[in-house]
Length: 115
Length: 116
Image 1 (cartoon, rainbow over the protein chains, first blue to last red):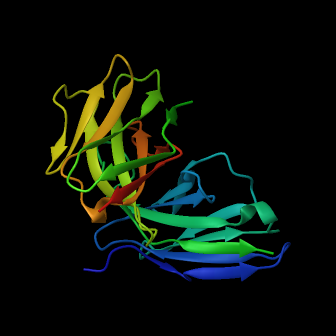
Image 2 (cartoon, rainbow over the protein chains, first blue to last red; image 1 turned 135 degrees about the vertical axis):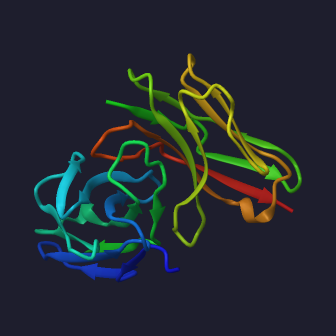
């Protein structure tokens, strides 16, 4: 059983460009959350998708947007990249959007470098 | 807003010995979940142990156990019989139960080094 898979593993972009990161959840999971982890810091919640809708959002600007597909996979899009967007982007999947669900599986992340 | 604080940026332990990582949190909620995650150099976040706030009994998973002090808002992780494979970044995390929303709030992390 494949866990959470993210692509690509590494990415280098130029300031001002746009980027799309992809995530496939663990089998049986229908909810995807995205986190940004700056170097030496803890992950920060960006947003969560369930039933193809954004259900919860952290304190991130509108440059960060996402999408969830009918097969539960998800994309994170970042427009007008800033140097400060350089970070490890983690995807986490879970079998449900909240409530008593405490299980969350993380992927290995996408390392984004903005130059 | 909920916050999680890990006051130890780095800890070291001798192989086979015991180490305790500290975590405090701030919340006005009475019902919530607490977690310890391990992040090795491979970058994948791995769940080590979880605690439901309504449970008075401290959670235990093999060599890992927690000391949950709800009144003090403290949630420390004890690793017994430390192994070289335990070396990693450890994150304490909090989650408020919501119908829609399983946002985790993480601390800044503690680097654990294991000496042979």
